[in-house]
Every structure is written in C-alpha cells, then in structure tokens.
Length: 389
Ligand SMILES: Cc1ncc(COP(=O)(O)O)c(C=O)c1O
Image 1 (cartoon, rainbow, N blue to C red):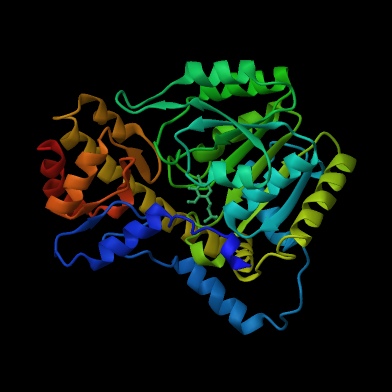
Image 2 (cartoon, rainbow, N blue to C red; image 1 turned 45 degrees about the vertical axis):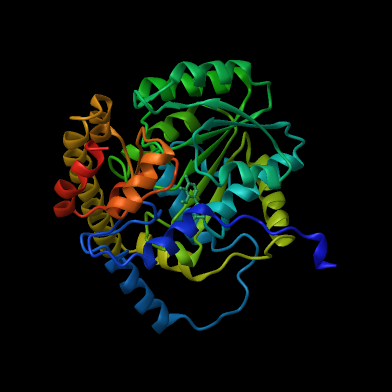
C-alpha cells in the first residue's frame, strides 16, 4: 500500500546543513542555517532559560495533562509581552501551540473552518508559509513584497494587494525582522496597512517569530500594536523559538483578537478543538520556561539583557558587512538598516554555488544569508569572496 506514495524532496535547508558538516575546510562559513549563533558559532541556551529549568526541575510535581489550550499563565504573560495593553484583554483568545509553525497551522485551520477563501502572501517569504497554508486547504494569492536588486520593500504592491483583496480575505504580515529579506516597514506604512485592512474588512495574520531581534522588544511589535489597535479582528502567531532560544522545545501561541468577549470564547473553543484533533495538547516544558522567566523580574531582566546583546551583535555585523558589500553592490548598503537574522543578496544560483565550492561559504540558492552565522572577526575575510564574484 505504501507504493502509492512518491518520495518527497528533502528540505533544501536541511540538506545544506548536511553538506556543510561534511566539508572539511577549516575556514568554512555557514550562512544557511536558520538559528542564532554566537561569536563562537554556537547556538546558546539563555542564562535565564537554564535558571528557569533548574527551578522547574526542583518544583514541578506532576506530568499530568495540561489541556489543549496549554498553559494559561504562559499565554497571559506572552500576550502582555507582545501586545502590552493595546487591546481589551477579554477580547483576546489565546492557545499555546507547538512553536510558531503550530500557531500558523492552527490559524490556517481556523480560517478554513470559517469558510475563508484564502490568504495573501508577499514574496519572498519564509519557505514554510505557503506549504502550511496549502496543507490547511487555503487558496494563496501572492504579490511581490521586496525587490532584491534595490533591497527595498515594494510597498506599492502591498497596497495594491490589500486594495484587491476581497472582504474576509486573510493577509499574512511579518511583524518585524522579515524572513528572508530583513525588509522593514515604516510606522507610516504600518498605519496605511492597518487603515486598509480595517476599511476593507480583511483579516491580518501577523507572524511574530523574532521579537527582540530587530530594534528592541517593544520596537519590534510597534507596527503590530498599531494594527491591532485599529482592526477589530486579527490573528497573531507567536514563536518563542528565537526570542527565548527554545527551538527544539516547540514553544509558541496563536492569539485571536476578536470583537467581543463572547466571540473570543467561541474562537478559543474552536482553536482548542482544532488542536485536539491534530496533536491534542502542546508540549509543556518550553512554555513553562517562558512563563517562569516572564513572571520573575530578575530572570526577565537577565533574559532581556542577553537578548539585547544578541541583537547588538547582529547589528554590528550588519554594519560591517554592508560597508564591505556596498563596494560591489551599492544597494547592499541597505543591509545595515535591515532587521533580524536575514538578508537576501542579489546572487545567481551559479554564484551561490561558486561561493560554496571555491570558498566554503554556504547559503541556499535563493541568496538568503543568516547574519548571525557570521563571526565579527570573519567578516573582513568573507567580504572579498563576495565582491570578487
Ligand atoms: C517567519 C517565521 N515564522 C515562523 C517560524 C516558525 O518557527 P517555529 O520554529 O517556532 O515553528 C519561523 C522559523 O524559522 C520563521 O522564520
């Protein structure tokens, strides 16, 4: 019976990790992987996470089921971190999910259950967005979000897409630290998006996977807060993978902003029902860690400080890299002002391959680079390999 199946292609990013590991050249550089790396090339565990885990080990006295909605205290703290006091809390329904991916999938399942026709997706985007939405049965309408040669957000296209969307359509937005381009929306552009979404009765689905990786914990959600202050209904998918370094613990949440407390209750029951028929309940550990950190002023301060140091490391590399690369591509000076872990270089697939084979510099064929994959001392060596292409 399994013969009815066909072999599925390997995930190109995961395949890249394998190729990198096999490369024995000492100066090889991995700009492909989508995780934060420090100056030693390591993906660290936050000090506050270690401390919270120690506490949990000592105090946790049961492994009984938590329930499909997950840890309610975690949800409350996480929503405060994301949204502050922007909206009436009783109008918000939250459900803990296995990572941001789980949140996006529950959001897509909910949209499908609501009879939603589809979702608008600006390209390029995180490669898993379209497959998740497709798997939930949504129609995907795409538009060009970013122009790689000029390194600029093509905001006119965003406006045209929103103006062309039908009432009730969902619209995927990256809260900040756009993956894969690092492209930034200005405050005025967020205001325009919010006004259009409200006017045209669209449902924003905001993907927040990098809070604290761009300009700061509050700055990275400023656009999102503006949006949810204006639109009556929205979905927010939160990932704790990067901001708390909890990747493998699968920690995240889906929040729905609704028009009333009773609507929030209905949405919550639907999200919980969708979880129940998929994975039943989310894993507990990562959410318990986040809850412990956010509830404790000292752990929270230490976590925010470490996160800030990571952000400043990435910002420093962005500036040095931009200075070097602009000597060959003037537009790449923009990398300095972009946000988060990623930028997208205007390279052909052949150039990406040459960097890999001749210099041991690894990145996907799209030309996306992970800024955090670079060590500060390495940048001066890496830049000439790009500029001499
Ligand atoms: C833009 C974006 N959204 C969502 C996710 C999902 O993250 P998680 O690992 O929490 O599922 C990622 C992960 O890389 C991402 O880059």
